Length: 444
Image (cartoon, rainbow, N blue to C red):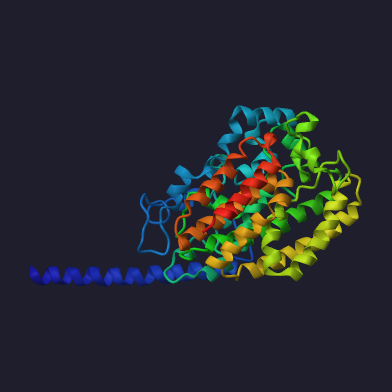
């Protein structure tokens, strides 16, 4: 009996070993086949492909693996991206769709472009619908070529990217991916018509938005990584916003008011003697002309002037043309597009350099003080510029405090900036500038 048991164990062991070898041989073959098929159009398989407990659907994070393995669970329960389609059913979205005459918002291509994984039937490798909202492959790319191979032991990020996975680990690529919706492309965008119908105008800052995103990744241990992410995000945001401006200047509708400072017109009216806008004057444009919305650059320029004065000067020359011609309303479209394209190229190259830059306590403190030193100019740019300044100071202060210790007075000062942004139409530039200066004065 004992000998038969031993024989059975040996047989099972041999079979198991054979199956193990065969399985990995098959996996290797599948990986090779996937590499050969990468030239073919990759297909989308839907978020259900990532939901297995052994993959990304676990309930608790794993600390002994390179990934948390509960990424799907975090997304489906906590991430607003998973609810992006469902918001199209609320009364405001329905009213907006009615105003625009596009039918039901939850089925309109204009809305689905950013509120769902909107693809053609031919791009689907299996059936799934749009109700999942902005899901895994919206950010990580169509998975048919890399889904199997990326689970193999020893699979590297480089190999996965070669198979079509989107490189979200690269901050530039991550920013570019986010901005396909948060800034827009030629195919998906928010214009003044949509804003008039009720859609929020687009505001974005990479590090601040990542901070409120439920993390489904392991944090970078560098305490100053957030400052680098902010700087790269600013460069990419500027580049993408300028590309958008160029497209619109070359497009059928100009001026496109979504490129201008909304609050130049949409602000609370006061008696002339109480108007800070009239008190500041309109030295850089004709009174009555809405200003170009330069919030994508007005804070970033503080970093550039300190970091690379030459690059800053080259960029400023092109942006001066953009501002001057765009603010004219009937400005030279070709000049706007040309200057915007040139500035976008400069900003794109700066993003590559900033992605390799290392920040520390001293450089972060210098950045905070440089931004605050430009408080009068930034605050005069309007509420969107003030928002960018507040998010930048918040990111920098978080990083600085990890090294220098808690900064309670400065934290309260930054929080006070946020409170001034609660009602955009009632924004007050001199008051905001004074509060920014207090941030710098309180830093220890």
